[in-house]
Length: 506
Image 1 (cartoon, rainbow, N blue to C red):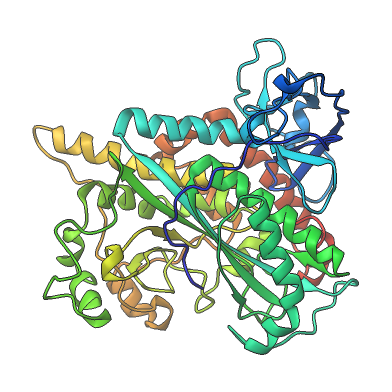
Image 2 (image 1 turned 45 degrees about the horizontal axis):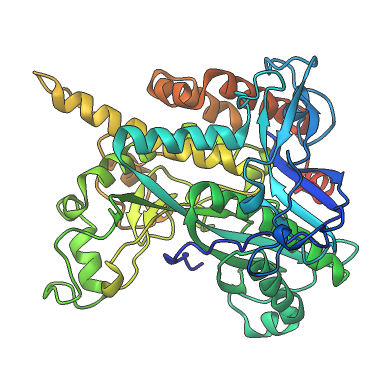
């Protein structure tokens, strides 16, 4: 379960469109379902040399780039049926416009579908042409802009994308263990083509390996600017499904597909930047620091209340907000019944509220890199999977960190300082699942919510008020209504029936 390393942002080349026939408009619903509208476009003949640049690529793009209309309520359709979710606050009247914000940068040729160019879309009010308040991509863009304007912070994001390769009839017969060479050998034709396809899409593939579950593999996507990274995640899922189909295989990204095995996560790695500098490397430490000569030295130094004070103060405050709001965040990052099946003790998912240094059994951690990279380069959130809308999930994670920053600023300005409820506690240096209930209680270690009702109670608590405000009360209402519709429909369903219903949807 490696983490993505920091990489320079690889820009897509200018789009050359001599072969364009279709524009594929891609978005993600509040139920986390990848959605598509395809607009046929046939390019007129090139009239003269002024229509090409120095690389002989066409300057021409549809002007304006073709758009499509979408019924607003379609965004709130749950995963189990095309029935609008009650209580979403979204009317069945009226449409939004699916718009490609930057055609030159966003349109990308699809290796598996000749003559098709795909782009992620923003949802605009058709009259004002302003972003719709429930547009997931615009919500994330707004949060990112707020962080930069008010806190001077920018972010880079990477993903660990886990999936299961099944047969054409959804059977899973591969049963090898984690990082099995034999399993990779068998799947190499698919994985090799997939890596090539993702590279052609401009995505950074850092590692691939066999994961621990039957038929399960993982691809590590490198760090990129936030919006670009989430766009890339949707493109990657499209590519994985397409390449597998070319090999008569079927893919699923479901969090839990076999009860006795670990499930599919989509771990999010976030790095915080200010003035072009990553805040993660501890200040003042270099590869020649005498006290840090090996991994045990790092663990001994940082796995304590004193050691965490060596971390950047802004980072600690950001982590404090994330840690305190983890139960509420599950409404956006692990929102479905299938999601909660995955979050079990000793299943690499992080079932207890806590954070750690290099600890694989906490939901929030700082992965240890190498001294020449700065010991830490990013923070990892394990509480995320493919049933989440990734734009909203990442927006919620960043918002939670901003709540931590805001509260720290408020308490530090008070004439009589009050206790900060989001103050970062000491890191967990053990697997909480191996501790007795008495020891868990003594150390104040709590289990994360085990179902939607518990997570929603945290989201609607006073502690999460600012989180709801940052995301937007209408966005929270629509997300909650969509997920409650799913929980009502799937309640009591066995895992086998759940997987059968959702296999081809995620």
